[in-house]
Amino acid sequence: MKKFARIFTALLLIASMLLTFCSCTKTEDASGIFTKAKKKTDSLKSFAAVMTIDRAFTDKDNKFSDKSTVNVNLDRSNEESPVYLNEYVMEYKGDGVDTKQESSTYFADSVIYQKGVDGSKYMQIATVESVNSQFSSVAIDMPAKAFEKSRVYKNDGVTQVVAEPKAKDVQTLLESFISGMETYFAPVDSADGFKFEYSTVSLSFDINSKGYFEMMAVKFKATFAHSKGDAAVDMSITVDFIDPGKAVDVKAPDDLSEYVWYEDTQKTEDELQEEFMNEVFELYDENNNPVPEYDELYLELCAKYGKEAVDSIVETFELLKATQGK
Image 1 (tube, rainbow, N blue to C red):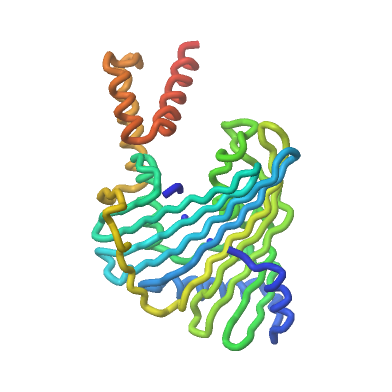
Image 2 (cartoon, rainbow, N blue to C red):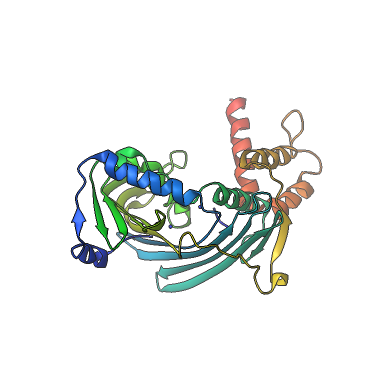
């Protein structure tokens, strides 16, 4: 699963006008409400949620968008053997192209089953880390500063927190949602990556009468430079929890024969990454020269980890060699 969401629209703003509300002027009010709901939601032993990520990109030559919908079901009531099912659909529109990609990941008894996912070892590393992160935390983190400009509405047992944070206070969160930009754009400087200027950021959280999150939403707009000019992104991320607090029985997909599988090594992402890099370095001898069987080993590594991942390390290694040789 390539590399761990959704948001309120004009309808939500219209609906909010109908609420009987109280406006909170103290940061600790909204922040405290959020923190309490996060702690409560993170305590769930099982949950089901639908995450939607909408992204629209524009520059002087192009206008396109992608939308990802993720159905997540998790049961961690047995901490030694959690069960997880993730069903993912991504739709792309632009340049006269309309495509759809579907994938599924099922985790049970320390075995990961995947369908429609890049089967390279490098992608499996990302999948293991992503799955494991779901077991430790359910709700997203949010610093207290994010609620300095916020409002709280209450109606029929539902508490809604709406905030307009400064981008710098939630920058790490925002940029985690703009990952994979290289699919569409090349950065001005590959070493620096992309740098974003945010124009608007808004947050919205609905909390039910039991204290669990019903909905978490983030929306923002930003501009950035790429190798051929400037572009803008308009993005919304929404997570809708289904009957939060109700036990979820996570069942295996109907036909696991359609899935590829491998065991979770229980290693951290850093350990797996180090293992991968060490295998690539075995292409060279102690003098940093290619070993005699370089071509054969290179092809084996590409088959195991994926050509793009291997080439990235090889190119970096060759660049370092050239720099040291000067």
